[in-house]
View 1 (cartoon, rainbow, N blue to C red):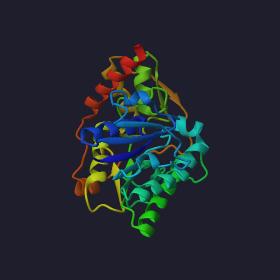
View 2: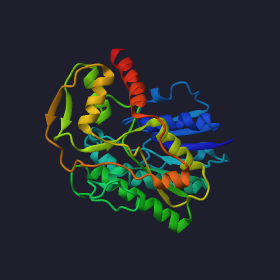
View 3: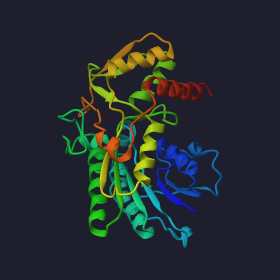
Length: 318
């Protein structure tokens, strides 16, 4: 009987990971989530005896006694707001969940002797001075800017995780996610994919910040989750950090044009000022993931967007 604990498991990436764990044969997944940005609806279809839905803020320690005598082999920490809209609205909560919350999740892994996977972010690189970004790049982050609540707290989460690895030998793996997208994203979360799709489906202009020449790379959620699965299950990876994303780089303007074409509307752009500290480039070097995980994204952008558009089309017309 395999049991995993997933913090933030009712969220976008977390719920897809729960699906993957159950498909892989896990007999129980304990989801700890305060629903600040997630929804139990994302876990519909999983019986409660298999997926435990535990309303809990991981900033507070969780009493593991309900699992007394039961082995837990994996703890995945994904609890954190991840979009600018949410982490600005919940700035202090974001700082706490990536500091106190990470410590509590690490303590759960220590308690059970479980492997620990930290969901980190490409935002640890800040507004990078090099492109593509490799795991050895230390970043260019404003520690007191409006994005620091997310950027710096994720950097702290990585540092804390590595100290648990060094001091107690905890088997820690860190994943830096780059612009993941797909079904179960929130339409109003402020990230470019749901923004563009929602606006295109509603017949509104697509909001482009700055001149639109800034770049991003987009990784479909099933690919992202497969990387988590490989990082969580392959042996010999303790203390390793991996970029997880798609190295195919696109400008925001070209991406807007693609979304408009797939939705079937003419491209009309509404220009807005570039937000403070918004990164000008975002592109992962995934050579390490290819080498050690045998992983790279396989879902083409157009195909992933078509699936995501279909999801939002259904949601927005309900």
